[in-house]
Length: 274
Image (cartoon, rainbow, N blue to C red):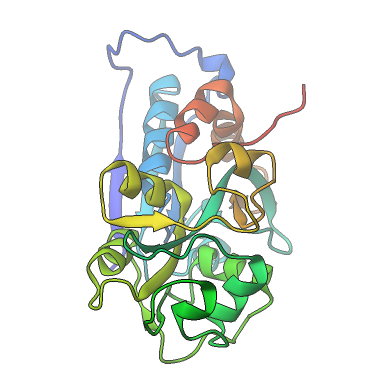
């Protein structure tokens, strides 16, 4: 069942003035935003702030890891979906970047990998960490679900679409993937790919994991923003072509200074040309 979080908020006394004209003055009515990835907390915060600036507008968040958001958009169940790429016949607006980190156990002394080595790891060509200067253990692959934006981008960038072994363990939520890498026995064997936002939170929180540099570039927000770290995915808002002032106002808010500050809490803001 799709988890529905209905957020109907008026102007609240927050102590911070939010000018309505910055986000689409006079937006009204109800819209639904759908997704299935790790973006929900930041999208929820975007929606709440948007509602504060537009008290006649309501945002319904439809989020479930097993849902198919684009189908929901096309069928009319949602007005906006959070995606990882453009789609034919839909409006697409990129609002942020998210790096894709390659995560291993903290005790794994593999120093770094190349893009080709990451492809070889996740396509099953490299099966031992010792082939990469790491421990004498077999690599345990932790894959992500097939309906996730992160998996599509990961496979396409590495040129391994359909090549991840069927025997790889599939884990949906980021927190469960992180716990598996941190606690898998033997503790050096597991590797996964994960949203950089979740990965950096785990590292800063003292979880026993580390992120592998790729092609001698550290996975960090500055390297994602300037493109030096190539393994990244766009965070995109998709909507139907038919005009909808409230949808347009929400997208404009996500691109505003206030919206980009919110996105910066979890993702990497985009460079906006003046």
